[in-house]
Amino acid sequence: MARVKLSEPVFSEDITDQVREALSRREVGYQGSYVYSFIAKLQGYTGCDHIGVYSSGTAALHLALRMAGVQPGDEVLCQSLTFSASANPIKYLGATPVFVGSERETWNMSPKHLEAALEDRKSKGGRVRAVIPVHVFGMPANMKAIMEIANYYGVAVVEDAAEALGASVDGQFCGTIGDYGVYSFNANKIITTGGGGALLTKSEEKIHEANFLALQAKDPAPHYEHSQLGYNYAFSNLNAILGCSQMDQLQEKLDQRRRVFEWYSSFLSERGVAFQESNHNLTSSRWLTAITLPCAGQAEQLREFLESKNIESRPVWKPMHLQPFYRSCAYYGDGVEEQYFKNGLCLPSGNGLTYEDVAFVSSGILEFLEKSSHHVS
Image (tube, rainbow, N blue to C red; front, top):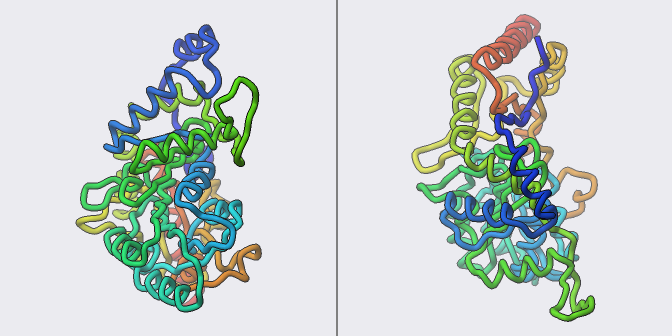
């Protein structure tokens, strides 16, 4: 059987004519009709009027933190169970990450630990400027509680919704709930532009400022004049062509990811395998279906077993407070995310998976569990 990939992009579109049109107009850079069309499609879908698109989700998060006023010496509270791109932009700005542990219900930032962290940093004289909850694997964080706590302490909330385009809390899309939101259009995400990201804000002024910084902070002058530090975060019109086409298929892609999750659940849930579960007010994008196994310490063995069958899987994110680069940073939690890292696995979840693919992966997992039970007994 052909290799079953973790999250491979699927392209059904033919964008040849649009590419030719853009080339004929010489619209290959950061300005062009497709960039504006892509932004308009994002605005129409999310209901957010103030959106900018940039070269990556990391770039968008960096800009969001700068819009939030993060400066050298500040502290930013960041979810520990995440990819390093959530934390790295904090360091870009000379600020200090402080990591917050997860709750069991969503696997995301624990409001209890967030409040404890904010209170403790305040008592220690820390200058907390922002909070970064992450909707890990597409599952929404407990945003109602997080927003209430952040508002009480007067800190900005930057939603890392890189994995959660289409996810929602009480019908409101992730990325539009906090003061700022970020999406990623990397090749493995629900929709892709080959590379890219979006920043969502509450004001047009902030988007103008972010766009200014993303284009090297060039002041209005006939020559190149720069009065502050800028970046090269431009988003190409050619990338936007693919983005427009992908946005037209977004609901179909979300539906398929959610079907894949339901298929896995039907095969595995009665065999002691646990999933990230939605509830009535949290709707996951199901970017990746993540599981935990019934016995501790089996995740890496299962990953290797699936690899022997040409099935790609991936460990759950290693928490940031355990990463060598960030190990000296403060951490507030009780180790829940460490358990997910040790005992969790992300399964193939791409839009192109068929029922037969999921059945094949599931049979491999069940075979492994059966062999493991015999070995233990």
